[in-house]
Amino acid sequence: MGWEPPSVGCITLNTDGASKGNSGKAGGGGVFRGWKGEWLGGFAEGMGICSSVRAELRAVLQGLLVAKDKEFTKLMVKVDSMLVVGMLKGELKVNIRRHALVQQCKDLIDSSNWEVIISHCFREAS
Image (cartoon, rainbow, N blue to C red):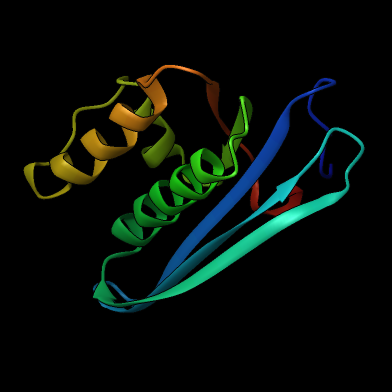
């Protein structure tokens, strides 16, 4: 099992977020790679004190914002949290504390001028 390249013309964004304790000191980030596996950029941020799920969501949101800024038109977002993937795809109920963050992500995903696919990946494959 390992990283799989996206289809030709697509960019892969792998994101991750974590917290030390739940809630605890948190951070997150992401990596952009092209269809040949080439490095296209990355980002990381400290997030203060929050839950691991919130850190995962904030990493996805930041990745979407960076991708939009870079004008990527086809994006495959790979997240190692099945809970976050389920919330973003509308398959799982969203807790009120996470609703605004999930909605921000969904609004970006649904905005025009690009195609975004959200999928789960195992930590080992990121």
